Image (cartoon, rainbow, N blue to C red):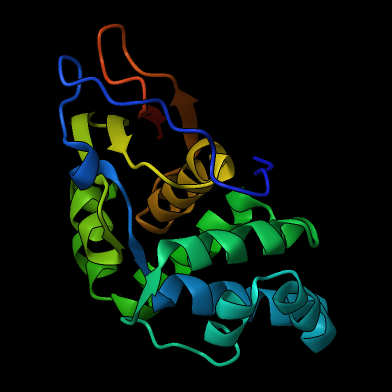
Length: 209
């Protein structure tokens, strides 16, 4: 997914349609792990000069925040996180949102929470995705609509993120997370909202072996 330079336009909520309030569905902060992971990936693949280039594309307040590592559990305003994602996506292939999602899954499940991998098979991992989402984002909702052996459906209500995050970043996260949990031949499809649902709902169909 190739994100625009700003979060995608968000439709006005309708009280008759909305499952979640606008306040609940709006993402306000992300964890420092997300940002520090992108920094590590950029330094590894683009070198210090590449990271300086990313910083140069940020607004002065965001640039100041990302001068140093933040720590896994620091809260960062989502507007700054979005700036970083978009700026890094304009670098090499490793910066594309799909690969950003994979890198974040790797850091979360192999470094921050390695014990999870000892407990979870693919189906259990999908069932726990909402818990991980709540831990790493303030605002927004991830619900698992259905899960069975080799198949899952998930929905995300999360206003204020770059388009690439929805279309490629989340599929990248699920793809790598499921592989880490032992799945093979993973296929994640981003779908539009079901008929009669919130127009800002994003749905994901997952298949694996």
